[in-house]
Length: 71
Image (cartoon, rainbow, N blue to C red; front, top):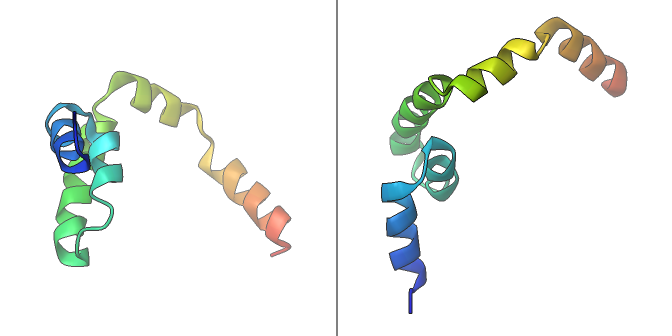
């Protein structure tokens, strides 16, 4: 049987950057910042992630957010 720590260790070794970010979200801020920077960099190198982000229109998204928040 796997316990929580075994599963967490396995996921950290074998999971992708998104899974690793989720598992390590409770790290102290100083350590987490460097980890996030590294994981986000690796996420952006994934072709599917880059393709999806290229489809987003940041200005349209910002306008929609402001509209919903009545800003």
